[in-house]
Length: 306
Ligand SMILES: Cc1cc2nc3c(=O)[nH]c(=O)nc-3n(C[C@H](O)[C@H](O)[C@H](O)COP(=O)(O)OP(=O)(O)OC[C@H]3O[C@@H](n4cnc5c(N)ncnc54)[C@H](O)[C@@H]3O)c2cc1C
Image 1 (cartoon, protein in one colour):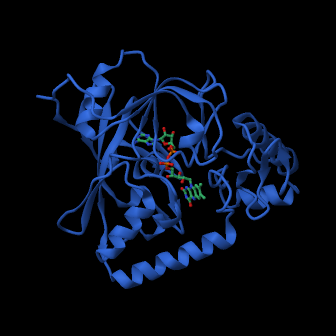
Image 2 (tube, helix red, strand yellow):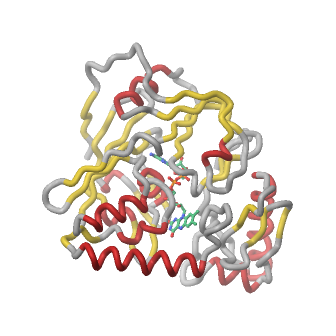
Protein backbone atom coordinates (compact mmCIF):
# COMPACT_ATOMS: atom_id res chain seq x y z
CA UNK A 1 0.00 0.00 0.00
CA UNK A 2 2.98 2.33 0.31
CA UNK A 3 5.15 3.98 -2.31
CA UNK A 4 8.41 5.80 -1.86
CA UNK A 5 7.86 9.27 -3.35
CA UNK A 6 10.95 11.39 -2.95
CA UNK A 7 14.53 10.87 -1.94
CA UNK A 8 16.69 12.73 -4.44
CA UNK A 9 18.53 16.00 -5.00
CA UNK A 10 17.95 17.77 -1.72
CA UNK A 11 20.56 20.29 -0.63
CA UNK A 12 21.94 19.28 2.75
CA UNK A 13 24.08 22.30 3.50
CA UNK A 14 21.62 24.63 5.14
CA UNK A 15 18.71 24.58 7.50
CA UNK A 16 15.99 27.19 7.01
CA UNK A 17 13.79 26.46 10.01
CA UNK A 18 13.97 27.69 13.60
CA UNK A 19 16.26 25.80 15.97
CA UNK A 20 16.15 26.36 19.74
CA UNK A 21 17.80 24.71 22.70
CA UNK A 22 16.24 24.14 26.13
CA UNK A 23 12.88 25.28 24.86
CA UNK A 24 10.16 25.33 27.57
CA UNK A 25 7.41 23.01 26.33
CA UNK A 26 4.92 24.93 28.46
CA UNK A 27 5.00 27.39 25.53
CA UNK A 28 3.92 24.66 23.15
CA UNK A 29 1.29 22.74 25.12
CA UNK A 30 -2.25 23.87 25.87
CA UNK A 31 -1.86 22.94 29.57
CA UNK A 32 0.89 25.58 29.73
CA UNK A 33 2.95 23.33 32.01
CA UNK A 34 5.89 20.96 31.79
CA UNK A 35 9.65 20.83 31.26
CA UNK A 36 11.96 21.83 28.41
CA UNK A 37 13.02 20.14 25.22
CA UNK A 38 16.77 19.74 24.77
CA UNK A 39 16.39 20.62 21.07
CA UNK A 40 13.33 22.15 19.42
CA UNK A 41 13.02 22.52 15.63
CA UNK A 42 10.34 24.20 13.54
CA UNK A 43 11.04 23.17 9.94
CA UNK A 44 10.52 25.83 7.26
CA UNK A 45 8.79 23.30 5.00
CA UNK A 46 8.88 19.60 4.15
CA UNK A 47 12.16 19.82 2.23
CA UNK A 48 13.79 21.55 5.18
CA UNK A 49 12.41 18.85 7.48
CA UNK A 50 14.09 16.20 5.33
CA UNK A 51 17.43 18.01 5.60
CA UNK A 52 17.05 18.38 9.36
CA UNK A 53 16.14 14.73 9.95
CA UNK A 54 19.14 13.60 7.92
CA UNK A 55 21.38 15.75 10.12
CA UNK A 56 20.39 13.88 13.29
CA UNK A 57 22.21 10.92 14.75
CA UNK A 58 20.45 7.58 14.27
CA UNK A 59 19.57 7.16 17.95
CA UNK A 60 18.42 10.71 18.73
CA UNK A 61 15.06 10.48 20.58
CA UNK A 62 12.44 12.23 18.42
CA UNK A 63 9.16 13.78 19.54
CA UNK A 64 6.50 15.38 17.33
CA UNK A 65 4.26 18.16 18.44
CA UNK A 66 1.45 20.02 16.72
CA UNK A 67 -0.32 22.49 18.96
CA UNK A 68 0.26 20.41 22.10
CA UNK A 69 -3.47 20.26 22.85
CA UNK A 70 -3.40 16.60 23.84
CA UNK A 71 0.04 16.42 25.36
CA UNK A 72 1.62 16.56 28.83
CA UNK A 73 5.40 16.94 28.96
CA UNK A 74 6.73 15.88 32.37
CA UNK A 75 8.62 18.50 34.41
CA UNK A 76 11.87 16.60 33.77
CA UNK A 77 11.55 17.61 30.11
CA UNK A 78 12.51 15.87 26.90
CA UNK A 79 16.05 14.68 26.46
CA UNK A 80 15.82 14.63 22.69
CA UNK A 81 14.62 16.60 19.70
CA UNK A 82 11.12 17.98 19.24
CA UNK A 83 9.84 18.60 15.71
CA UNK A 84 7.14 21.29 15.84
CA UNK A 85 4.89 21.34 12.77
CA UNK A 86 2.38 24.03 13.59
CA UNK A 87 3.92 27.21 12.21
CA UNK A 88 5.17 26.28 8.79
CA UNK A 89 3.90 22.96 7.47
CA UNK A 90 0.66 24.69 6.62
CA UNK A 91 -0.05 24.38 2.88
CA UNK A 92 -3.66 23.77 2.01
CA UNK A 93 -4.66 22.88 -1.57
CA UNK A 94 -8.08 22.28 -3.07
CA UNK A 95 -8.00 19.38 -5.55
CA UNK A 96 -10.53 17.93 -8.00
CA UNK A 97 -13.36 15.63 -6.89
CA UNK A 98 -13.99 17.55 -3.66
CA UNK A 99 -10.64 16.54 -2.20
CA UNK A 100 -8.18 18.68 -0.24
CA UNK A 101 -4.51 18.13 0.48
CA UNK A 102 -3.32 19.69 3.72
CA UNK A 103 0.03 19.67 5.43
CA UNK A 104 -0.03 18.55 9.04
CA UNK A 105 0.66 21.94 10.61
CA UNK A 106 -2.69 23.31 9.43
CA UNK A 107 -4.84 23.93 12.49
CA UNK A 108 -7.94 21.73 12.57
CA UNK A 109 -10.34 24.68 13.17
CA UNK A 110 -8.82 26.45 10.15
CA UNK A 111 -9.32 23.32 8.04
CA UNK A 112 -12.97 23.25 9.14
CA UNK A 113 -13.50 26.93 8.28
CA UNK A 114 -11.57 27.05 4.99
CA UNK A 115 -13.25 23.96 3.56
CA UNK A 116 -16.66 25.24 4.68
CA UNK A 117 -15.98 28.57 2.95
CA UNK A 118 -15.27 26.67 -0.30
CA UNK A 119 -18.64 24.92 -0.08
CA UNK A 120 -17.10 21.61 0.96
CA UNK A 121 -18.77 19.68 3.75
CA UNK A 122 -17.47 16.97 6.10
CA UNK A 123 -14.87 18.63 8.31
CA UNK A 124 -17.15 20.97 10.27
CA UNK A 125 -16.64 18.76 13.37
CA UNK A 126 -12.97 19.88 13.53
CA UNK A 127 -13.94 23.48 14.32
CA UNK A 128 -13.68 23.05 18.09
CA UNK A 129 -10.68 20.69 18.18
CA UNK A 130 -7.81 23.08 18.88
CA UNK A 131 -4.93 21.05 17.44
CA UNK A 132 -3.26 20.48 14.08
CA UNK A 133 -4.20 18.06 11.32
CA UNK A 134 -1.11 16.03 12.38
CA UNK A 135 -2.44 15.59 15.90
CA UNK A 136 -5.90 14.78 14.55
CA UNK A 137 -4.40 12.05 12.34
CA UNK A 138 -2.22 10.66 15.14
CA UNK A 139 -5.17 10.39 17.53
CA UNK A 140 -8.11 9.91 15.15
CA UNK A 141 -9.60 13.04 16.66
CA UNK A 142 -13.34 13.21 16.59
CA UNK A 143 -16.47 14.97 17.73
CA UNK A 144 -20.21 14.89 17.15
CA UNK A 145 -20.15 11.39 15.66
CA UNK A 146 -17.41 12.13 13.10
CA UNK A 147 -13.78 11.03 13.15
CA UNK A 148 -10.69 12.22 11.27
CA UNK A 149 -9.90 8.98 9.45
CA UNK A 150 -13.40 8.74 7.96
CA UNK A 151 -12.14 11.46 5.59
CA UNK A 152 -8.63 10.22 4.82
CA UNK A 153 -7.91 9.11 1.25
CA UNK A 154 -4.14 8.92 1.80
CA UNK A 155 -1.41 10.29 4.03
CA UNK A 156 2.17 11.28 3.36
CA UNK A 157 4.66 10.25 6.03
CA UNK A 158 8.32 10.74 6.76
CA UNK A 159 10.81 8.54 8.58
CA UNK A 160 14.01 9.47 10.41
CA UNK A 161 16.03 8.99 7.22
CA UNK A 162 13.93 11.77 5.68
CA UNK A 163 12.17 9.43 3.22
CA UNK A 164 8.62 10.31 2.27
CA UNK A 165 5.96 7.67 1.69
CA UNK A 166 2.36 7.73 0.45
CA UNK A 167 0.16 5.48 2.55
CA UNK A 168 -3.52 4.60 2.61
CA UNK A 169 -5.82 3.89 5.57
CA UNK A 170 -5.25 0.16 4.91
CA UNK A 171 -1.72 0.63 6.33
CA UNK A 172 -3.15 1.62 9.74
CA UNK A 173 -5.18 0.11 12.53
CA UNK A 174 -7.70 2.78 13.33
CA UNK A 175 -10.12 2.88 16.24
CA UNK A 176 -11.64 5.35 18.69
CA UNK A 177 -8.94 7.95 19.47
CA UNK A 178 -6.28 5.45 18.50
CA UNK A 179 -4.17 4.94 15.39
CA UNK A 180 -1.39 2.43 14.93
CA UNK A 181 0.82 2.39 11.85
CA UNK A 182 4.36 1.70 10.74
CA UNK A 183 6.90 2.40 13.50
CA UNK A 184 9.08 5.53 13.33
CA UNK A 185 6.98 7.22 10.64
CA UNK A 186 5.27 10.55 11.17
CA UNK A 187 2.60 12.38 9.19
CA UNK A 188 3.50 15.34 6.98
CA UNK A 189 0.32 15.74 4.88
CA UNK A 190 -3.00 14.12 4.08
CA UNK A 191 -5.50 14.06 1.23
CA UNK A 192 -9.05 14.21 2.48
CA UNK A 193 -12.36 13.43 0.78
CA UNK A 194 -15.16 15.90 1.34
CA UNK A 195 -18.63 16.33 -0.13
CA UNK A 196 -20.18 19.18 -2.05
CA UNK A 197 -22.14 21.34 0.38
CA UNK A 198 -23.50 24.81 1.01
CA UNK A 199 -20.96 27.22 2.41
CA UNK A 200 -23.51 29.13 4.49
CA UNK A 201 -24.96 25.91 5.94
CA UNK A 202 -21.51 24.61 6.94
CA UNK A 203 -20.53 27.95 8.52
CA UNK A 204 -23.83 28.01 10.43
CA UNK A 205 -23.16 24.45 11.67
CA UNK A 206 -19.72 25.56 12.85
CA UNK A 207 -21.18 28.52 14.71
CA UNK A 208 -23.61 26.22 16.51
CA UNK A 209 -20.89 23.68 17.42
CA UNK A 210 -18.66 26.42 18.87
CA UNK A 211 -21.49 27.94 20.91
CA UNK A 212 -22.28 24.51 22.35
CA UNK A 213 -18.61 23.98 23.26
CA UNK A 214 -18.18 27.25 25.08
CA UNK A 215 -21.32 26.46 27.09
CA UNK A 216 -20.07 23.02 28.16
CA UNK A 217 -16.26 23.25 28.26
CA UNK A 218 -13.85 25.38 30.32
CA UNK A 219 -12.48 27.11 27.22
CA UNK A 220 -11.01 30.08 29.13
CA UNK A 221 -8.50 28.10 31.22
CA UNK A 222 -5.51 26.02 30.06
CA UNK A 223 -6.56 22.38 29.54
CA UNK A 224 -6.04 19.50 27.13
CA UNK A 225 -9.61 18.56 26.35
CA UNK A 226 -10.89 15.19 27.51
CA UNK A 227 -8.29 13.49 29.69
CA UNK A 228 -9.80 9.99 29.39
CA UNK A 229 -11.47 8.13 26.53
CA UNK A 230 -15.13 7.31 27.02
CA UNK A 231 -15.47 3.63 28.00
CA UNK A 232 -17.84 1.60 25.78
CA UNK A 233 -21.45 2.62 26.44
CA UNK A 234 -20.62 5.26 29.03
CA UNK A 235 -19.01 8.66 29.50
CA UNK A 236 -15.79 9.27 31.42
CA UNK A 237 -17.19 12.63 32.58
CA UNK A 238 -20.27 10.95 34.09
CA UNK A 239 -18.14 8.38 35.95
CA UNK A 240 -15.80 11.09 37.30
CA UNK A 241 -18.64 13.40 38.31
CA UNK A 242 -20.55 10.67 40.18
CA UNK A 243 -17.41 10.03 42.25
CA UNK A 244 -17.72 13.63 43.47
CA UNK A 245 -14.42 14.59 41.86
CA UNK A 246 -15.39 17.93 40.29
CA UNK A 247 -13.20 20.70 41.76
CA UNK A 248 -10.74 18.17 43.24
CA UNK A 249 -7.26 19.71 43.00
CA UNK A 250 -3.61 18.71 43.26
CA UNK A 251 -1.50 21.84 43.51
CA UNK A 252 -2.62 24.15 40.71
CA UNK A 253 -4.40 21.40 38.73
CA UNK A 254 -8.15 20.93 39.25
CA UNK A 255 -10.95 18.81 37.82
CA UNK A 256 -13.14 21.32 35.97
CA UNK A 257 -16.45 22.33 37.47
CA UNK A 258 -17.84 22.73 33.95
CA UNK A 259 -16.76 19.35 32.50
CA UNK A 260 -15.53 16.56 34.79
CA UNK A 261 -13.33 14.94 32.10
CA UNK A 262 -11.29 18.17 31.77
CA UNK A 263 -8.38 19.07 34.07
CA UNK A 264 -7.58 22.77 34.18
CA UNK A 265 -4.41 24.59 35.08
CA UNK A 266 -5.54 27.34 37.45
CA UNK A 267 -2.24 29.16 36.87
CA UNK A 268 0.44 27.40 38.91
CA UNK A 269 0.06 23.73 37.95
CA UNK A 270 3.19 21.72 37.28
CA UNK A 271 3.07 18.70 34.99
CA UNK A 272 3.56 16.68 38.18
CA UNK A 273 0.38 18.18 39.68
CA UNK A 274 -1.57 17.33 36.52
CA UNK A 275 -0.26 13.77 36.31
CA UNK A 276 -0.92 13.16 40.03
CA UNK A 277 -4.51 14.39 39.60
CA UNK A 278 -4.98 12.17 36.52
CA UNK A 279 -3.86 9.17 38.61
CA UNK A 280 -6.10 10.15 41.52
CA UNK A 281 -9.13 10.41 39.22
CA UNK A 282 -8.38 7.06 37.53
CA UNK A 283 -7.86 5.31 40.89
CA UNK A 284 -11.06 6.73 42.36
CA UNK A 285 -13.17 5.74 39.34
CA UNK A 286 -11.66 2.23 39.46
CA UNK A 287 -12.44 1.90 43.17
CA UNK A 288 -15.99 3.34 42.98
CA UNK A 289 -17.18 2.01 39.61
CA UNK A 290 -14.79 -0.88 38.86
CA UNK A 291 -13.93 0.71 35.49
CA UNK A 292 -10.32 1.27 34.40
CA UNK A 293 -10.37 4.55 32.48
CA UNK A 294 -7.94 4.73 29.54
CA UNK A 295 -6.08 7.99 29.10
CA UNK A 296 -6.66 10.02 25.92
CA UNK A 297 -3.88 12.54 26.58
CA UNK A 298 -0.32 11.50 25.79
CA UNK A 299 2.32 11.88 28.52
CA UNK A 300 5.99 12.10 27.55
CA UNK A 301 9.32 13.00 29.09
CA UNK A 302 11.06 12.77 32.43
CA UNK A 303 12.80 9.64 31.23
CA UNK A 304 9.68 7.59 30.40
CA UNK A 305 7.14 8.08 27.61
CA UNK A 306 3.70 6.53 27.41
C1 LIG B 1 -10.50 22.59 24.65
C2 LIG B 1 -10.14 21.29 23.95
C3 LIG B 1 -11.12 20.54 23.33
C4 LIG B 1 -10.80 19.36 22.68
N1 LIG B 1 -11.78 18.64 22.06
C5 LIG B 1 -11.48 17.51 21.41
C6 LIG B 1 -12.50 16.76 20.72
O1 LIG B 1 -13.65 17.12 20.68
N2 LIG B 1 -12.13 15.63 20.09
C7 LIG B 1 -10.85 15.17 20.08
O2 LIG B 1 -10.56 14.14 19.46
N3 LIG B 1 -9.86 15.85 20.72
C8 LIG B 1 -10.15 16.99 21.37
N4 LIG B 1 -9.16 17.69 22.02
C9 LIG B 1 -7.79 17.14 22.07
C10 LIG B 1 -6.85 17.64 20.95
O3 LIG B 1 -7.19 18.96 20.53
C11 LIG B 1 -6.87 16.72 19.75
O4 LIG B 1 -6.48 15.43 20.10
C12 LIG B 1 -5.94 17.25 18.64
O5 LIG B 1 -6.16 16.51 17.47
C13 LIG B 1 -4.46 17.18 19.01
O6 LIG B 1 -3.73 17.87 18.02
P1 LIG B 1 -2.35 18.59 18.38
O7 LIG B 1 -1.80 19.15 17.14
O8 LIG B 1 -2.55 19.55 19.50
O9 LIG B 1 -1.51 17.33 18.88
P2 LIG B 1 -0.37 17.34 20.00
O10 LIG B 1 -1.00 17.48 21.34
O11 LIG B 1 0.69 18.29 19.63
O12 LIG B 1 0.16 15.85 19.86
C14 LIG B 1 -0.66 14.78 20.26
C15 LIG B 1 0.01 13.46 19.85
O13 LIG B 1 0.06 13.40 18.44
C16 LIG B 1 1.40 13.20 18.01
N5 LIG B 1 1.60 13.95 16.76
C17 LIG B 1 1.41 15.29 16.56
N6 LIG B 1 1.72 15.61 15.28
C18 LIG B 1 2.11 14.44 14.68
C19 LIG B 1 2.54 14.14 13.36
N7 LIG B 1 2.65 15.05 12.40
N8 LIG B 1 2.84 12.85 13.09
C20 LIG B 1 2.75 11.89 14.03
N9 LIG B 1 2.36 12.13 15.31
C21 LIG B 1 2.03 13.40 15.62
C22 LIG B 1 2.26 13.77 19.12
O14 LIG B 1 3.55 13.17 19.11
C23 LIG B 1 1.45 13.36 20.34
O15 LIG B 1 1.71 12.03 20.70
C24 LIG B 1 -9.46 18.89 22.68
C25 LIG B 1 -8.46 19.65 23.31
C26 LIG B 1 -8.79 20.86 23.93
C27 LIG B 1 -7.70 21.65 24.58
